[in-house]
Length: 40
Image (cartoon, rainbow, N blue to C red; front, side, top):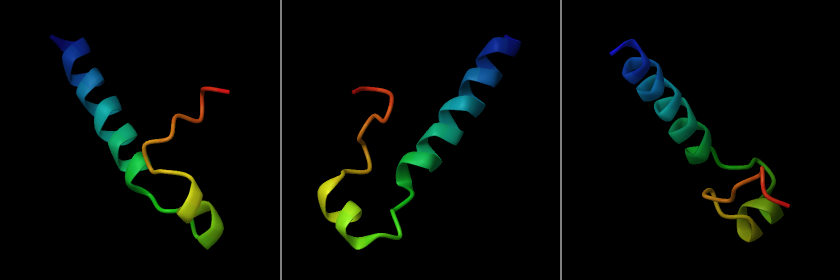
């Protein structure tokens, strides 16, 4: 059960990070918020 709580917390943090918008306009216009930076 403890793992579920940790997974939920991690998922929540990840969602918050994805919702952030870049302060640089050119990046905001070309890179989606759902872009996975772990992929090449």
